[in-house]
Image (cartoon, rainbow, N blue to C red; front, side):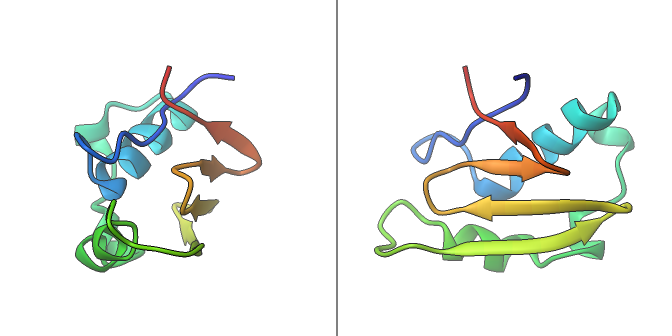
Length: 85
């Protein structure tokens, strides 16, 4: 598997989603459509803060791809799991 995983202490979940989408599409992150066209990045970051408790999961469409974000830091784009090495 290739891609990224969330480091709660250094990265926001929204940045990790962008990295995963860039890896999945082979596109420079700067060239991607803004994430806010699909989901509110600030709300996403707040939901997955490191001090949040419980399990959370958000699924949304971005550029024709299905993105699934889970509270354990896993980001799945069209069935491909992206985790930080």
